[in-house]
Image (cartoon, rainbow, N blue to C red):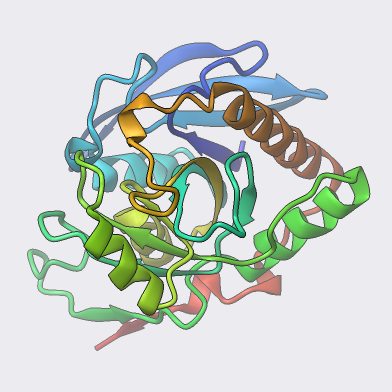
Length: 257
C-alpha cells in the first residue's frame, strides 16, 4: 500500500471507503481511510477531516505527510480546489500544477527545524513530481479528458478570500490559480522523499476576475464533474501503470550539511 490521494472539499465519496485508521506521529495523530480499486488498496487522507471541519490555516500538515510516510506511501496525488486568476482557465478546469508562489505566513513548513541538530536544504527546481505529472497528462489524453498541463499555484493562508489587488499582484507575478492548502504539503513531501503531484480543480474565478461576489456564486456541477474526472484519471493510473521513483528527482532533493 504505497499510494495515496489527499483530498479537500467534497471528495469523500470514494468507492468502498473504510476507516478511519489512526496513525500516531510526533506531530499529532492522523486519521486516514482506505479504498480498493481492482484489488489494490489506496490510502485516502481528507486534509480538512472527513466532514470538512478543519480550516486551511489549522490543518496539521506535518502530521499528515509524516503519517503517510510512516504508512509506506511513496506516491501522492493531492487535489487542490482553487480559484482561477485568468479567464482562460474557466470554472471546472483541471490544472496539473507545476510550480508555486508561497504567500503563507503562519505555517510551519519544514521538518528540518533544527530541533534534532540536523541542517538540511531542499531543492525546489522541480517541486511537483515530474513522473506523476507526466503520467497524469498522458492518462488524461488517453481518456479524452481535457486538462491544462501546467499552472503556477499561489498559496495564501485563508480562510478569507484574496482581495482584487492581491489577485492583480499574483497575475503580475505569473500566478495562474490560487488556493489555501498546497503549502506546505508539497514542501514536506519533498523533504521526506515522497513523489507528490497536485491537481488544481477550479471552483471559482478569483476575486475581481469576473466582478463577482464569490460567496454568492454556485459552481457545484462544474466542480463535481472535474473531481469525478480527476479521481477517474488517478484511479486508473494507480492501477494500470508501474510507478518508479527512479524516473524523477523526488528522493534526491535534500542536501544535508
